[in-house]
Image (tube, rainbow, N blue to C red; front, side):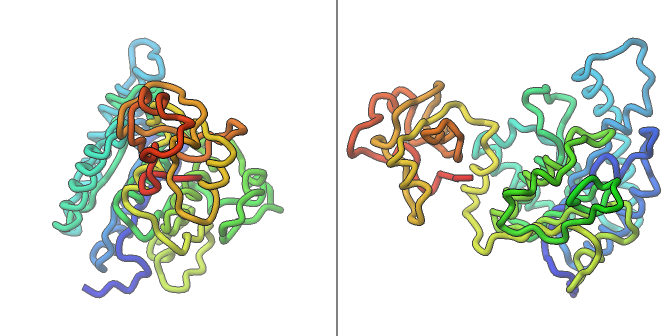
Length: 363
């Protein structure tokens, strides 16, 4: 099959404001248009994983509740009803092209252990190998507020890293990341964002979408992390006609924001660890010597002599935060011993690494 596009495997994340009308109802016309584009990419040989919002908004329109629900109950109820409606609509749309799609519902906890992570990876790999398009969404019916993804941007970043894709395309309802308020005619889209991103936060509006949980600040944070892992990230307007084939075309000039990928990729284990900060069971506070060594140009493990404080209770292979002498977290790692052992050996010379370099990710 001839693939004339730039990438062979991509994640496409479609936000709530792309798939819903202003009144909160599902925009079936837009869904159909996006499915047409995804089907064209699929038939050209591009492996596509779709991370789709819209379930809660879809369910909200179906039900008129008898009493006011708290936010968790409402999300569980609306997503339980809306997810059925959403996936059935995708199923029928893709079936018109002779393409099979499959539903993958996940939770943040499913990424917290390496075993669960690999199980999900295997599931989606088998789907792609058999020509099935995975449609991924958070399982809001069993997710509690403190264990939820920030939004589907965070989920799509995790999926992109896990599935070793070449590009993550985040479709929103504006053309990209602006250098000011998008509503201001004087603002323009930042077409490319490289490694120098220190001043980026000052440009970004912090408002959230009407039906989603995240905003542009979340998108930027996720995009920068994914780009640092060697994956190209594009933020574009999902309401533009034929946006996906245009973005994937060689020498594409469609208005969007491209996060330039780092020239080197990192291992699959480090990709998992990079997105695992939310699962950290404790903290390792390090001294100045360890900080200098870890942030230097050479690959370095965290040794017991570099640890001066241990916070929390954890077991071997749990995820922990690495905290600099000034109190700022600088990374995460999979710890090689329990918290009791770490306290016993901290500050001592010799001994095995507390966190080996192969299982250490620094921001």
